[in-house]
Length: 265
Length: 307
Image (cartoon, rainbow over all chains, first blue to last red; front, side, top):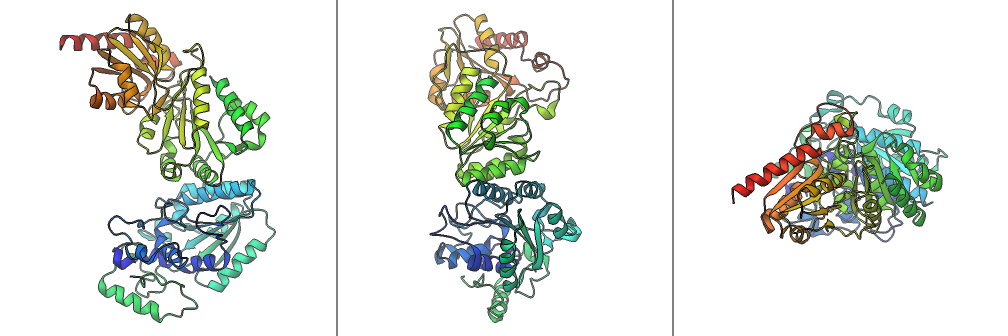
């Protein structure tokens, strides 16, 4: 997809593959489809990770092979950043700091309606530079949104460098806890642990919102992308594309993504 | 006018429990009645407007009709991107109330004044803009807004200048409302509180016609052309920058459909410099009777010579 579309943000998508896989496979109640009013909501607030979600939506059958192959090509639907016009995407989140507030509003509305539906919002650690994120956390805690789970894809990098260098967020766990969240910090690539942590957080009797700080690796699964922030904005060439494919196809399928981005093209 | 607003809001909320009033810790006594009668539908989201607008989008997505109240200096300008991406792009039902529009907060300075809100919102697809002139138009505007499940901005400016209409007019999207007709050279089109000034000025040009523009977007070209075509000079008045507001909208229509000399009276692309009473500040911006009379007379003279 990324090679065919000659697009950036590859590493940003690779860091959240397991998170999405666990949510779609084990936790999201999707009902009859992307417009089911009874569905759980998955908000990808870091909309530049959308390639990983496109791959999941393709597996669900909500996006066609053709749509995936035509990613970012002339006059096509799948854009480089998440937009709500795509079935399965709930918000326009190319601009950061929007999705969490919309998800917070959804969670608040669903609670008011007495619904059991849940809202999952995935934000980036770089995205947490945005003031609107912290406004949303205040609101979620104040209104005791016990149906909201915020997952921070904490890959430690943002566009121009490491989060420590650019805008040090220090302990996200402490910050979320101080805002009134029940928080766990875990390895965001360990699917079994993600599954268990999500289950336990929902089982908790805590009367407020939950959060997971998912420690992830930007570019996970491709050795030359891992830990190299160049891959926030670098495009694949024929050579790097083949090298990435061969690494991904050799990796253990039980711990990597159910869908391997790039394979479709 | 504020009483008419509060009454219309309470009536709508009592009839529809999905209507929620969201405020960013503003409103003071304006919502006393609402909080009394619809306490469960009142949500104070704190001093956090970006989140408040995002929350409104989430609520609209799950079936609520949010009414988001703030000063017009904060909503829309501070949260323009939230309005664009979270609400307008999906044409979600929401009613924004921008209070204190123009220079109502005359002593508080430029942070609390808004003379750009119409301009920025006019450029957002799906956005509708209402600017009522008196309590009759306010009631009609609220009713029209609640009948329209789309993003609507209702601009509430100086509210204690008295009535323009004698009875409640029938308000339609895009249509100018006649205040009085005339066969003279001049037609006045004003919006919001400046209807009051326009009524005074129109008396000085006997035979002039006067229209109110409560619906600034959409603004139907045929309605504007019909109001202007029998006259030689068009004067617009608004408590807003002359760029991008009513004057801008009328200029866009006339230049394409029916060119006529147009004099746009409003805030001349400048910030307030000093503070004082509302009438002082209107004078500072050249929006008092004497300054506007002089400008209109000079405009008419210039264009009658060029004929």
